[in-house]
Image (cartoon, rainbow, N blue to C red):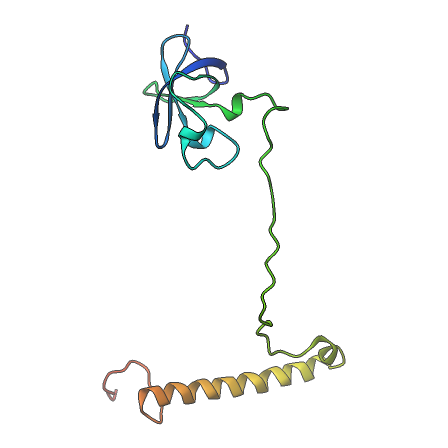
Length: 155
């Protein structure tokens, strides 16, 4: 009796590795359950869930061209027994430090026209670029910022 993809079978764990477990099937063939197919939750150590000679119910999920059989324990569980993977969203934790945003508060920008907001942005941007250029020039020890760092050549 050859196993087929999609079949749910009873098997016996014959060996355990860090990445999964080998299971002997009723037809005496052996398949492997990858650690990610053991449970719907994260498993750090497979020995927490499985042990050698343990009877398990497995589902055949793949048979490759070399005849290797891929098995799943979590897909063999009936839907009511299989815990649904949790989709959780953790809200960002509040920091004790205030946010670092120096833009215009909303109430000020709501009363401004688009042109005024654009002019304010351009002024602040120019100031920041000027400061950046000054700091870069001071770090290099020259008064004019240059690119390339090499000697200048005339073309």
